Length: 166
Image 1 (cartoon, rainbow, N blue to C red):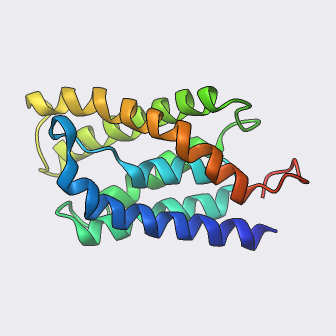
Image 2: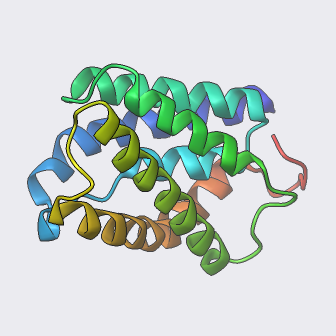
């Protein structure tokens, strides 16, 4: 059962990395991208044990670091920390709206961490006007996407016959 959930999480992660680095890089509403890799890590961590969730966050972060312009390890650190925060719950959310809200809050944590750590590593400055827009819009985009992606991921990662975490 656990290997099935991990395989699905890895598949979702690969699809998210491909979407993030290709399709969403061209769309960019308001010049801000939804962070689908962050979204998939948050949602996957809800139905995985902590160790596989942390490994998924680290792997997704390294993949994005290798394909992007950020210093190697920055996104890996951030996605690992967000995956850890996502595993610190007592029970998965009961409704899609609760899932969307918690996803937006965890996305806010990830974006703020990226802004602060990115400033420390020379990726930008907290004083830029784009940072405030990013901090506000990425969690909203991710929360909205969680309304649609979350139930799909729950269905494939968590069988209907089992109420336990995978």
